[in-house]
Length: 255
Length: 255
DNA sequence: CTTAAAAGGGTACGGTGTACACAGTTGGTG
DNA sequence: CACCAACTGTGTACACCGTACCCTTTTAAG
Image (cartoon, rainbow over all chains, first blue to last red; front, side, top):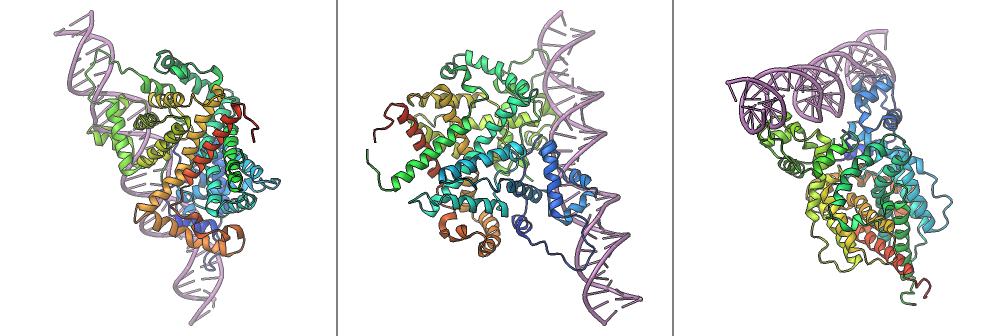
C-alpha cells in the first residue's frame, strides 16, 4: 500500500525528548540490551532495502533478534520511530556547505544535498510530511545554512528564515518528480515500462481528443525524463533572491 | 499513525482506465447499486472529516451502507481509490485562472489555488507523494496553466513545463509548513498548545546551550506562525521567472 | 426457460500497532 | 546478606487493516 507515515498520531514532546535526550540510564534495573541508535539504524536499513512499507515494529524487532514489544521500552510507538529515522538521515548532509563561499553557492549546495538525500532514501518521500519535528541534525543544518546566508544584505531575520523554508520546501516538492524521473531512467525494468508505458496510451488518446490542444502541441521531449526541471527551478528561485538582495542594496532603479 | 498512502502498490494502468474510462456498463448482469463517483466522494468526505487514516475500505463501505467487498467491484484496491480521490479534489480549482491576464498573475493564482486546496483537504499532504498519476482534472489544470503562460516569450516548451513543475513543486513543498502554521493559528486548542509548546522548551534549552549562536540570535518573531513564508518564496520564484523572460527578450545587459 | 454474466457480500487469512500482564534481572538499602 | 523497588524483555491478545475466495442473488441475452 505504501503508507507514508508520521505526523498526527505520535507524541511530539516525547519525540523531542528522545531526539535531544541525554540517554541517562536509571540505576536500578538490568542494562538494556538495545540502544535507540541501533533501533533507528536498523529501521533505516530496512527502509533503504525494502521500502517504508517493510518497516514494521515486528520486522525491526526481528532484525534485532528481540521480541516486538521490546522496542516499546525505547520509544513510545511507531510514529516516534519515524521521527527519529528522519532526523538520523539528515546527519548525512553534514558537511555539504563547507566549500560554499556565497549565499548563492550555499543555497545551491544545500538544495542539491537535500535532493541527494531523497535519492539515497526514497522512502523520505513517504515520511516527512505534515509534522516538522526538529531534531538536532535538522537544527544543526539550519544553523549552518543560516551561517552561510548572512551575506544576503538587507534581509530581516524573518526573511532569512523564509529563504531557507522556501528552498527546503521547493526541494521537497520537486524531489518527487525528480526522484521518480531518475528512477525511471536507470532502474531499467520497472518504472518506465510499468509507469510511463502505462500512462502513455491513455494520455495519447486524451491528447488526440482535441480537448487539450496546447498539451498536444508540445514538443515530444517536453516530458522527457532527462529534463532537469529541478535545476531549472532552483536557478530561477536563486535569481529571484538575487533580485531581492539587489533591490535591498539600494540600487532599485538604476536601469 | 498516519500513513500517507498511494504509490507503489497500485496498478497504474488500471487507475488510469478508471480515471479516463467512459464507464460503459456491460449489458448482462444486474445494475450496480453504487457508482465510482459516490465511492470516491464518500472517501473524500471521510478524509476531510476525520483524516486519511480514517479512510479504510470497511469504513467507506459502511458509510455507503454496503459490505466491504462490494467496493472491489468498482476499483481494484485502495491505492486506486486514493488516486481517484486525488484527481477528484483537483476539480475544485477549475476556474482559478480565469481572471489572470499575465503569466505572472496566472502562476500566482495557480499557486494560491493549490495552497487553498491543501487547506481544504489537509490529507492531501499525506497522499500525493511519489506517483503522479495524471487524471482528467490534473491534465485540464495543466492545459489551462499552459494556456496562461504562453506569454512567457522566448521559453522553450521544455522550459514552460519546467515552470509549471517548479511552481507546483514549490507549493507542495511549502504547503506543509504553511498549512501547519495556519492550523496552529486558529485551531485553538490542539496544534499550537501541543505542538509548539511541546517544541519550545526543548529547543529553548538547545538554544541556551550555545551550540546554535545564529539561531539563538534570531529575532523572536522569525519563527512566528503568521509569517507569510509562502508568499515570500512565491514572489521570489516569480521574480526569477521574470528575470529569465527578460533575458530571453534580448535586453540582457541594459543596465 | 435456460444460462451466462455481473453484482453483492460473508468468511477467512495474514498482516498491522500496541495494551496488558507477567517473568527475569539488577542494584540500592536495611 | 536479604529484600525489594525499579527496570527490561516479551508472550498473549485485541481491534483493525487490505483483500482472496466463493457463494448467492439479480439480470438480460439466447
